[in-house]
Length: 410
Image (cartoon, rainbow, N blue to C red; front, side, top):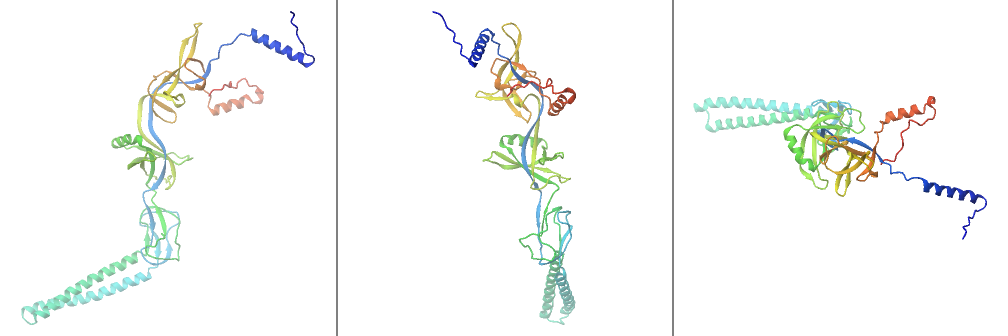
């Protein structure tokens, strides 16, 4: 039986020829071996790492005082600038003193009158004391003179207290700063009538030097914080978000007496001198609490640590010989026990040793025993931009010879 080859007319001839050529090429083309997976690696190092807690806190003033008047009257003078820093004892407001000066004058006059009467009674008592021995006056007259003198002494003491009270009310007409701090907005202005201990304050003063920063910490650090706080002063660094200023340094001063069960945190407070007033009451700040320095720790980049059902692991690159006796690089999975970690590195308690190479990028394409190809770490952003600008300069044309090869590394 003869095999017939059907050749379609027109454009179908070209398609059939191309299909036949492709099939013949596929039959004769040898299969290539699987390419090694490109990865980035880092060397396990032995070093020191600062153990710290990063969190967010709020600035609190040591003292907040609502300034109110102790007497009734009209505000006749404001002695400070709104928002200015005032020292303790500086005058802030003056109340019309004339009614209170009049009361002082009245109390002083009453005291002088009763003092004169007391002096007369004492003189009478002295004279009666000499006459009673001569029986020139009766016992009843003598006792009456004694009673009058004692009564007038009590009256004078009462007058003295009334004068002191009147003088104190006059002193209250000048309202002074009870603490050193920064004033807020003036709530009651000149010309208004104020009442003693009114609900509305005249102004509020916030103590700015020093200040406290309140922040939460995970309860799992509570024992360590308490232990370290007994040994040394724990340093705390704070800085406002997006601030270019150096962080403010203070010390941990307070641990709350109970853990917040819903959040699993403990409230802490640190004290800062705040001499430049970079910290403002009510402001949210980034907080770093330094606990200890872990020395001679086995450290790996955070990117190297992966999670599986069996627990944390890393891929370690090892050398081996293939079937042809050539040296190849293989990725092997190692389970580890991680410890403390910061933003860049993690302490490995068990599973790794210094000098091993761990995969930091490209793990998604790996399996235990897979061949790998180590790639160089990419250049910093500034260097990459400079290289790109040089590559596309007019003197070099549009050549892309220096551009890095693009591999899909996860």
